[in-house]
Image 1: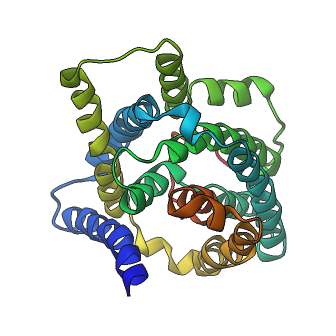
Image 2: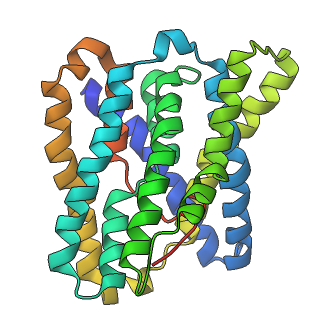
Length: 282
């Protein structure tokens, strides 16, 4: 029962905020223009500040785990392979194969990792997850751009576009700024530190409300098969393969709930569309 309550406390708030966003859209309190502006504000400001603040507050020496980072990167390669195996027999065109493979592969680790990590570990105690975000976001960004370009009709990989997408990513900039702050031993007064904390707290709720507002159930029917395959692989098959491997490698038993959450997030985070992760489309 305790495990169920913990899971419920981590997941239920997400559904409430998603539902709120959908409701606000239905009563015309927000429209596409407002939601798109909020989306841009959230991903370029609030969530980036949240990542910066969590790295700033983390004890890098204590939370750094080389095995965690290597394992997380390897899982991204494995998930990419699984996504391609799912996309090829499901879709007939390059464009739709690329979209489905990208949908299975690319997660929103920033939102769901931060939210669920905070629910499991407490605010200010997700330094390891923030470090993972700093690594996983650039890796996913690079692979996603390459994936979408390869599946675009007449597409070819442009290294300048890949590099530009990484160095201009708000999360990459925030992570580098956080590491630089740690390296220089910069300590903000509480008044300023609290500003970063409070702005960062806006990120996940606003992102989930925007996500709910952007739900388009009208497009589900025409894409039902692809959506079903994407959900099946992203939320069931990928975790069914990788979570037992995580346990078998001893991460759960040796590192406890904190690092278990950090290891599990990159393999089981759901996906949402975010134009600020990937600067190219199929």
